[in-house]
Image (cartoon, rainbow, N blue to C red):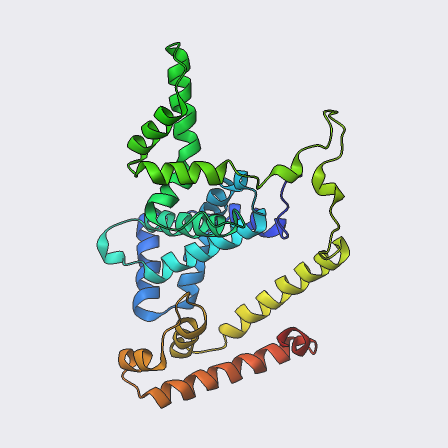
Length: 292
């Protein structure tokens, strides 16, 4: 399989050269964002730890997801960590961010692993990312002792090791041993034989179209980030809570938190979208093509 390609290698190189924050500076930035909604502090905090997100994304490339998707999911986890981080708890932001970054990447990998979903419970997630590692270790230990371990005993040992029910291990074993990658098997024993996947008609976009779409999406993403910075802190908060969460907040809940009526929150949301549209239109006359 060809090595995954991240669409913006310059971004990765820049992230790896970002400043290293000491504990005191990190704490000041976290307080500035939490208490004052200082966008510059947030940007500096996220930029400094983007290398951490990228580094963690590379650890999951063996699951077959495109590298740019993994980095994007890692970035989402990093931003969620920055949004929820409480500097009063006395924990370094990097320690806190690791959990959010890993959770975001793992959720993405599990959503895209197979046409038959592997599940999303804590035991299923633990199995998905640990089963093969534990199995390999148990098999090595048995082989070192000159023992041929039976399959049912191996699965029971995995269940005990990971701390999940045996039936969960049996189900996950069947799914991970399925035919997700069978199309990559060659049609003959010859090493140069064509893989079965090569015999399928490609209905997807061609290379030129993919490159063009990726470029357009990257451009639009940058436009949207710029448009978001044109809003004040309250408007940004409303847009994030209404449009950028996995479970969008209702107008009523935002009104209760902000001390505003439902109608007033709706008006602020509408005004924020109008500002963003004007910002987008100012950046390029082609923006209307992206918005449709």
